[in-house]
Image (cartoon, rainbow, N blue to C red; front, side, top):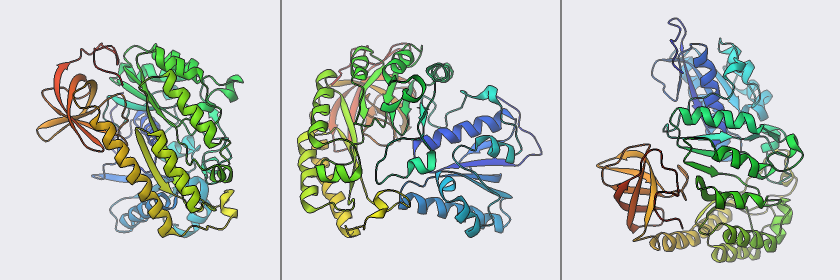
Length: 450
């Protein structure tokens, strides 16, 4: 969307903190502002007179980063370097009243569902005709597609329902329309995100319809890769696996945050699942989608977690052998169920347990990556770096997973076939053996699938 900015309006700089769901919100905001012919940019301080900080409030570290970022721009405002500071996002939704008192210099506080009000405060009209249109601020050939907002899950440690509200699915038609719009503008890969992908459709259609959505998106011309993030394990719709196995442009990749494996901790977390059921689900996924790469996230230090529970978690990770795994430490979140309990695990123990988890995973990741040496894979080229290029296989998501360092002449935003010749825990090294035509979809170019 090309527009001519108002000459007299100050440049608006949107700062995004936190997860990919926040990034999508920032993209929507930028589209609204640019659609009103305002000069709006993403994370470009130069020349900006107005700053919008899109905050995260998920864990202590994220909240601290958000507050520090707000204070930094408030300080710049006090020095006359910028005119106004507005704050939106999860932290603002959750702590708006307290923050308004503590940081009165902020010109406006907006929650996660206050987009029309924020657009108006920035001197624009909220244009309903722009809904479904947005310009990704990512590399241009990939984008996130948020299929639902909020969450209905009762997890003890999570404050997302307090910040984002209950689960609200978007209808299939609007998502196909947005994906088509993105594909027409050069996006080759979309990553489906929501707080809980597997709940998709229940509120709108009375049943889980993630499989139907995937089938519809797989028919969108130009989408070579469709990737699934944040699938809740309890109640996982198994029909999704059949669609993943059958449709070549749905990546053999699944992000399924499990959080823990010890039954006492899973019960305390209110996850609605046991270790035995989790192991059964993982076995089913791997059997129905051979070679799938599984990413998961673990949480250590939940109130009541014992050394025995932690040992059970390490044992589970060794057995499950996830291709990708991340970990974070528990922190009390106001008004959550777990916050009613004593935070029994000292911070130094939490950090030590997280380090043990990652040490186990590093061994698994190193062995897995070494097993790929000598094989050829289809790679999406993300960027030029130094004298070479960096890309990803279908088994890797941007920013959080492995990267492939390429030797050979390729084009950013396009596919190539590359042979792996070396590997470390988190990186692959490959030489380009062929360039894949632009119209060719993932999984059909002759490169190996796991």
